[in-house]
Image: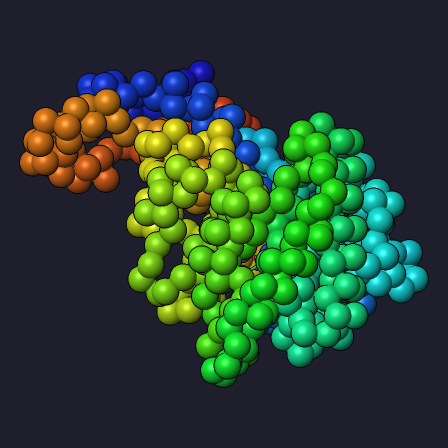
Length: 417
Ligand code: RNT
Ligand code: ZN
């Protein structure tokens, strides 16, 4: 039976073919792209270390929508629901505080692969890759705002041990799941007000990172990334891990650079950074987020910023060197829906970018025909992307259009937390 979705797709396919775009090729490329879903949208960055939840670190989850995951089981169930509403094969991104400690206190420098055994089993059963993050916040030894750059040697050493432990856990994940686990180092270290010495904390952070990375780990199993930030709540004036620090560190030590869409000046996008960084950095990690006036971590939507990121990845052929992960936490809406909306938006943006007549656009640009370039870029906005997207969802067996909302509502009613 030919459904309306199929019919609309056939028409859309002809429209795209007329401008030289092969929709089938685009869809097959799209199905190869994995997005790493962040565990922390499921419970407002709380984790399962204690009942304290998110404290400090200059980040803030706002809202009190019911249903947040209270246990690893609930979080996995929630993630399963979201993953069934998102087309394609993806990954899951864990923070160290999402360990399973069996009710015993295990401090950050004592965590081991065994504390993530159930996560690894869960991922294995579903064919998911796992990524990982040390947690340099929500801890008494991070309360004064400094971790790897702390002036106190014992504090620095504690956090160095945490970083080393995290790399080992990720290596185990990568080995067991047969797909590299990316470990993202984000340290909130910084000052609220004007420091006298901007250099010493950076030097200390550089040394701490060098110590953490001293042990070579097979890149087939584990890779390290460094995430920069402009400011945080309580570190408005100075952040040790600034963009220049992280870019310089990543380039000189052959690490990944993590670009978070919310970590720059309000009008500064990350899309334009990708081409430059790609010349000097082997691999890039993205934290796709949505800043609203500040680093507010709103749920990602299909907007100009997102499209621009996707376009840069496709136009510059950067997909095989880029790890796409999401970073948002909105507690005012259903959390499974938040994952679904954000991830579907990211995939849709990649689809839009794959549906550009790139060869033609490049030709016009190189010939100096900017008139045709602008005209085509404008026309592309009203091409039948939606028909191709619906067909893709149908083909990959996930709900088409708004149908997924009912599934989330049903699950919400059933779980009633
Ligand atoms: C914070 C960073 C960081 C965190 C996660 C929880 O500003 O973006 O990536 O959001 O590690
Ligand atoms: Zn981030």
